[in-house]
Length: 215
Length: 255
Image (cartoon, rainbow over the protein chains, first blue to last red):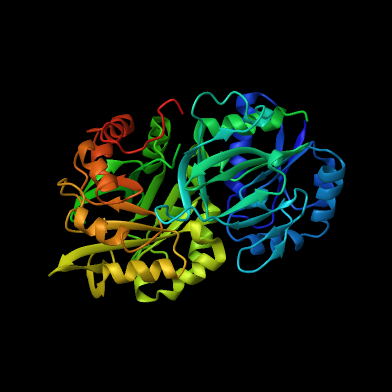
């Protein structure tokens, strides 16, 4: 059975992500075992990797680095080894070089860019919280395929990832003056600012797409 | 192409059952919360709220089991409140499957708990629940399920909650709660005009036509209702259609 390593570093949405991934594997009949783990050997043995995350960038970065050998295993398996990687919310933001939530904190630096507070303008409340429509950029990414017209997903965040290369943005959402990065993609790396595990049928479809994605 | 109005059914839970009262008393049974949650997920509710209305006095183990069982079956955001006193309580609920935790009495008694919760779990997970009632020409906060008067001004407290890191305000009008006479629009306007975080309108929805004014006139970004949904008077789809007709942005029914 193909293994998905779901990284446990104390993130609040760990179990929600686990349940949704199991449901997505069932619906997509992909046959994956979803293993919640903080062990480097599981990451190295896995077919693909999911990094969840909610809350504070610096806390999450510190939490991830506190897991022995995990960042190194992720680099070996995903950054160098090409295994499909999905980051969710702060798990996606950690792909950035720097997070600017209460000072500058280094991220994994796998995708160039920064995570900074969203500035949608006076008429827009922060956090950006609720269901918003995805605008896919360029050719639809396989993880975002088959979503139908006007795909809506659930967001809850005050900070967003601005990629240095606009080509790394796979989808945006409109909120105020500037489009907010909703998904990033580069080679075998994919990340969502929104929460697929909380986006009902559409979210399960996205997770199911990820499980069958062959970058 | 903008953020959509959230329709949030609220389950008031007491001793493991969903109940609904008028002005916080005269509770009547409205069913098994997990079954209701599943039904609302299937109907496409935008979010779900559990409030343990007995938790300030009683044990909370039952609520944890319900949260866990609900999270197991529902793939929508879940806010849980009732009896949350500390960042540790909050983390336990998040681990059980809640996405956001509402703090009420404890935040009023000691607003620094808001900062501690936000530091621990992020502002997006911290909902400050305000139960307010008109007193003279302003609104004051009541706590402990509406039983305790505090003399604290609701608008001033909402601003303090925002400054301390609350990510959202759940604003319940105690004058309107369970009366089905519509949301308290002057109260909503006062709070939404004072803060720049999302505000959920609660208390008083008696028909789907009551929802849109909370958004369009009151400035709310989400509408919470219990009675109209639990007792079969309206479906989530009807609520969505009524909001759309009145010009409030809603998520399309297809997904």
